[in-house]
Image 1 (cartoon, rainbow, N blue to C red):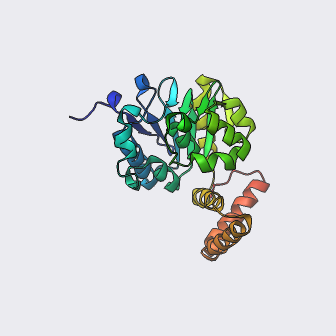
Image 2: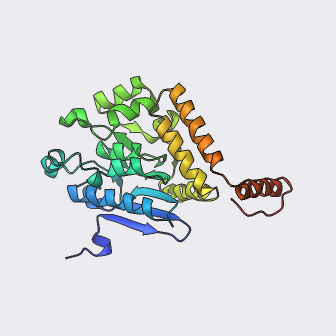
Image 3: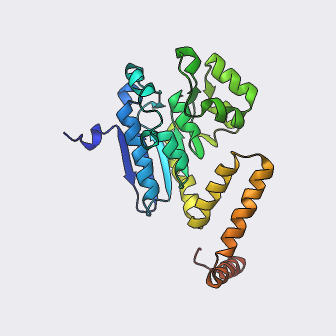
Length: 265
């Protein structure tokens, strides 16, 4: 029997302006993830990324936690299942997504929840939010990127401390270290995420997708190869532009410089 909307554990809402919301909705269990929730979440991101009306995705958790990790009562089912099935892997689908993903993190983001936060492109956290890596505490090997991504963002020494001691990384420290973009009051969390999303919506949407892609793909390379990647994609982009697109760009710039209203690209 199909769950009612309030009982769905992964909620998806689309707004007419192009912002979509994915909400982990199992608050009584601090949004811990079951195998079926992971599959539903993966499919939600895949579906939203294919939806031409969606331009930005905001991810949050219902209640007092963002996500407390994998539901360890079903750990064997999760960790010994088909772990290579990318269709059922939410982090893989988030990493594949062309659309920008904004994480709105309130409360705890623990282990798998921490990794899901790391898969977001921009992170807003509520005051008091905590990111905790308990892999070493529970004897679970990281497989959604925590052992590699965190050190690249906050530095290797701090990442080793966070992961080897399972100490909480507070939102405030995470902001100082460059992982969290903004720390806001809890009641302002979705408002701030939406404000960032609306800032993205104002821009050339083709370029937004291309820009996110070149940043994220370049992060996997050394600087020399990353600069070559940018140059290659830039030439491909400009070679594909029509005379009309160049004229539209010039009209847009002229409109901005004269402070006259101008249609955006």
